[in-house]
Amino acid sequence: QSALTQPPSASGSPGQSVTISCTGSSSDVGGYKYVSWYQQYPGKAPKLMIYEVTKRPSGVPDRFSGSKSGNTASLTVSGLQAEDEADYYCSSSTGGNNLVFGTGTKVTVL
Amino acid sequence: QVQLVESGGGLVQPGRSLRLSCAASGFTFSSYGMHWVRQAPGKGLEWVAVISYDGGNTYYAHSLEGRFIISRDNSKNMLFLQMNNLRVEDTAVYYCARRAEWDWRYVDPWGQGTLVTVSS
Image 1 (spheres, rainbow over the protein chains, first blue to last red):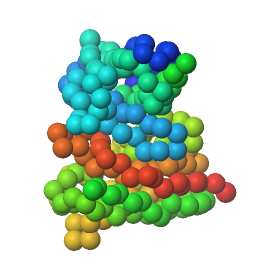
Image 2: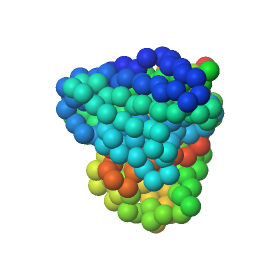
Image 3: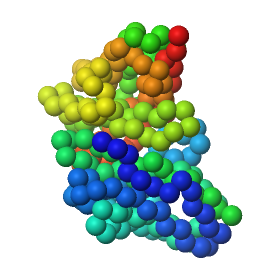
Image 4: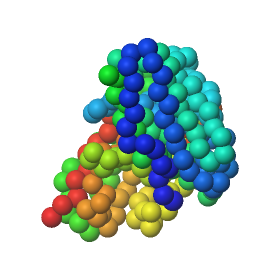
């Protein structure tokens, strides 16, 4: 199972929006509702930010939103803040009770 | 609060074995599936394995080719990862993580990880 494809980097100024794509196939992203997004600061453990494509766990700011169209999922961070500068990874269920992560995107707040 | 503390990492030679442990606290360990996820230095996340709440079901990343075994001891609130025939490419930080509340396919929270270095 190959990693899902994400752009290596994305950036935006404070207050702007940034959208990160996550492209897979009909065997993963396109075939299941089990798409999630994780935030990771350098040297720290990841944190779940979005699950089931669009849902936010308690405590995650509503500036974070998720969507999916076909084989591509997206994470949008609106009203960028300095604290949003981190690495972001998507994940999807695959057939055969496996999980696959994306290649990761480094978000820079300019 | 939930705490997951990994141990057992270190330097090991190619072809050797290593057993990682994860001590869980702050939740009813025997009610939750558990994951191992790894991250090679400077690279992305890679899912390794998951075990059901009672240990009755286990699933592995196909790329591991049967070299790793996930297990648990619910009487001691412990999760394990037995890694055999280690390769240089297995070098990574290994994270222990709990399944999220909504489904086993979501991973949260995570431990801080333990570094495994495979080198001669």
